[in-house]
Image (cartoon, rainbow, N blue to C red; front, side):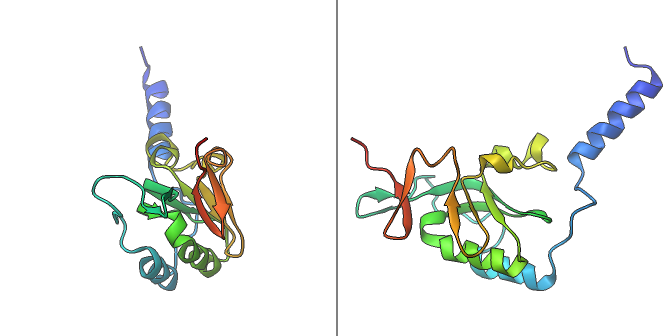
Length: 154
């Protein structure tokens, strides 16, 4: 059983966990426009059947229900993203924010991780100049002719 003091403390911790962080900057109107121009509206879908596109038989790196997290700002966008096709657009966003952008799966930046995104689990990250496949994805994806595709199966 909780006493009132323990209950109040637990409630405050829970509210802090689900509430937006107050120590993060909010994107400017220009940065918001940059995101919309490059990635579309929040909740954008690339496919109704949640299957990655292919080019010449090579599967794209697509993250469905992705979260775009910018260092110093937190989550700034969510939706489906085809990193193979849209890598340059993600880099433009990073340059516009002058910060590192991470593409995370839904569970790594929502629910209990809303205010503490699991950046170490990123599918992809970029500083606007170079882009990196996340460590947990690098066993399945590789760069081929400056695009990211699934590795060919043997």
